[in-house]
Image 1 (cartoon, rainbow, N blue to C red):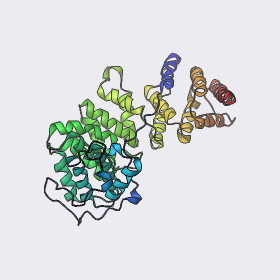
Image 2: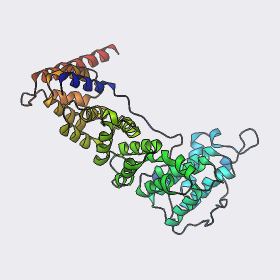
Image 3: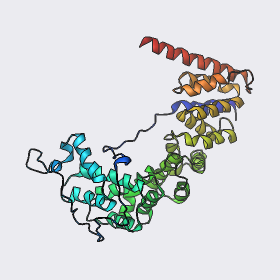
Length: 374
């Protein structure tokens, strides 16, 4: 590859965006406060497809008026009062928690409370693997159109939030297997909530076939995001392979692979990205994509992999390296660049060493000036 190609490809390094932040409106209760009883022998259990109202009386705090003579909804309560109600529900077994979930909308018409109870279900499902009977009950609930799309979706979301194999199986069932095609389509988006930064070793085998075989853009987007969140070597390689496809092979898979790479922030993805740097020619599309993604992660191991890859660069990359370091948002990258200035570290071109020196000096000077002006 000629020098101009190197410069063009490396220019992409400076187009990296910020990391997407995720949060929910209703905080889940602390697991240490959720005293979940055995779901094999629940104290109150409904075996029919249509749950019955809970036998426990609704707390007084939750039945006071909101000023209009109606049930006082969660949105009118202070956080402390809401949490007290949720804490009490969290002490129940999983069947009773689910019954309160049903009643929150069916009886109390309080979607805010129902959302809060959905988070409690996530904790309960995480702390103790649910019985096959309970999972089947949830299957029937999800495909029962007598319930709203929102409350059925909250249940799928509760399973997605567990970050467990059982949760992943439930989400994939809801999006790919269960009989209602419309519901399958609406639940595809929950797949992108899977992936736990290297903690779900079982997940790649479950979702990578979908990435290879699906022609549904919505499915490809969700699976790509889950692959990026988990950061397994095989998944990262699939994303890099698709995103670096030749111009005449650009399709939805190429599009969503590139998008997913911009979402990676987990250090668990560093090893496969560092491996791609070593195995790809400097300045190639795959090398550049790996460089961009590692810059985005920016931790110590990512920084070391990035600086090591510069040892084989030719002098045409020097201007880009200077700008990359001057505008860096990662002190770890700067530290790694300064460490590489030691005489014992070999470089293919001394121009690269000079760019590292000038870039780190410019970075230090810039932040010193910013600190002085504050």
